[in-house]
Length: 174
Length: 127
Image (cartoon, each protein chain N blue to C red):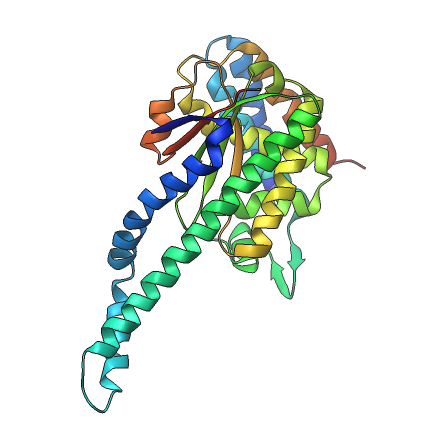
């Protein structure tokens, strides 16, 4: 799991996503096996019978898929930081956040103190902002849904989060 | 009416559990599952775009979403006031994320779950 200070967060998140891109490629090939069937049909449409059309077609699909993944992941990061900044301006400090950039349903978990989770004013404010940010993501990438949730930072086990795909972690220092 | 009775039954269980002073994590889980019945009973049936939604599967299709929880969350934010929707999402998050926390849920959190459930109930069945 990547653990970093917030100052270099953007840069290190970029590095993390670059590593994740290969995984997306591999998963795409496995998950979208049917693309191969489509490409087969497409290739047969070529009068010269060359296989180069099929390869180019598949490469293009994978390239687009990876580009889309990077766009989504960057937006997830931006919206997470936007939420954290908003809460800080309102006087509420978050401790860390975790991102699972899984392409079809990216998830963010924001860790805050247990006291904040029991504070009605904070709960109303934070979830209203989360809803707003989720709508922004929805406008850009629907039907992909961004899930942002809050969790208590007390006794939080990052290993369990990592097991569930939250591969990126950023500790917030103010 | 059926949904409301089912939700009230879950709420009774949640209230009993908090009195038992032991299974606070289950208080939150049962409170969340109780709230699902109340919000669906209150909002459905409804029209989303041109689709008439009678149940959560219809809602899922209308929003073009793959998950029922996600679809229900959006339905709640689109139909109930923002402060109540926030409390629904709190219950959802706390019932799902408690497995990332390695200590037992405290009484305070369980009581907060019941407070939010009561607020959701009042909003859903206000006269």
